[in-house]
Structures are given as structure tokens and as C-alpha cells.
Image (cartoon, rainbow, N blue to C red; front, side):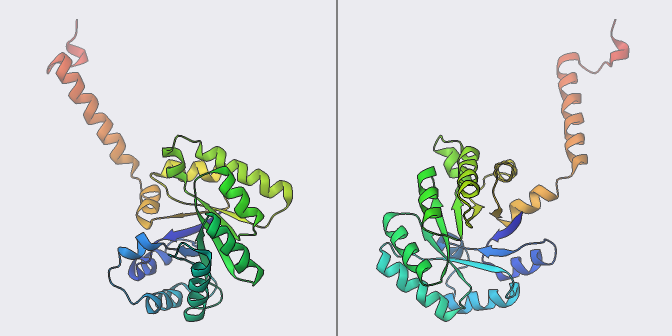
Length: 229
């Protein structure tokens, strides 16, 4: 399993990097918005220094035409480094950009994947990673785990090198389901990761006992089982 942080806050990444065996950092315009009015390239150069050259850094384009996506990809690589993975949404224009960039040796993460066909054509286009949006697929009424499993089967059958980077999780159970379905990697918020790791079983037990006691008192009053006839 490859673990990535879906976050662009430098202090948060520093904190979690000391604890967890992560392999990369992913970002998108929504995540970047949380950091406020940042100096875009300078921010990601600093983030690269924090995570090191051996970790993957995934940065998303914002344009909607292939021509502009390609220009943005070129500028990102020029201003950060050649090893950045360019995140491209899987639209028709995005696929055009993916094919162009891969033919020139760029690293590409195909993102915003909601359907099986999106993922399958991104694999065929040579994307290094495909990022199915697990919770959003589920919210659309589709089986997100089956979607990931479909990608796994295709990659294995045809011997493709694309990795499945599952993303967009609402709770920890979805993360585990994605991995069980065959995802190579997951990217999630540090908060969700901490929630999955740091559950305190004692609190759950105490809460259950307190609830049982309250329910007993509501139905039986203050008497105990020993007082029952």
C-alpha cells in the first residue's frame, strides 16, 4: 500500500511526515484554497523541500482545454521540478492532454474519475496513476469498490503499469474497502488518517455502558436486576 496525504499545509505535512510511512502528497484547487492567498510556486517548492525528492508530489491543472492544460503542466514542471505528477481531470480535453504529456515523458495522475470507462481510457492513455473518487462514486449510486476492482482487473490482465490511487473518502471504512478492492495507493486527509489510527476503544466501551445504564433506568427505574421478582 502507498499512503499519501491529501493536503498542502506545510506544517501539517511536517507533523505527519514524522509519524506515518507516506510516499507522497496530493493537492487540488480546493485544497490549495484552504491555504489562502499563497505564492503558488514558492509554496510548492517549500513543500518539496519538506517531503524530499524521494516522495511524489501531485499538482492539478485548472484550465479546461488540452492546450492550456499542457501549458500549465510545462510551467509547473519548469518552476518546481521535473518529477511532479501533473493531475489532469479525465475529460476529452484532459485525455488529449494526458496523451501529449505522456508522449513527452511527463508524469501524470488522471483525476476526477467517477466512472469505469473514465478510468479504463486513462489507463489506456498511459496515466501513471488514476484517481477514482471513492465517496463521490458511491454517492452517485454506483459501487465504488467494484469500480476499483474493475481497474485492478484491467491493469493486471493487460500488464499495465498504471497505479490506482483511490481518493475522496468520507470515512475510514471506504479507505479499507478501496484497498481490499485492489487500490495500490490511497490519498486522504491527515485528520481522517489520525481518526482511523487513534480510535480509543475504551471510549466506545464506556459510551456503550453508559447508554445501557440509561436505557435500563428509563425502562426499569432505579432498581437493579437483583431487585426484580
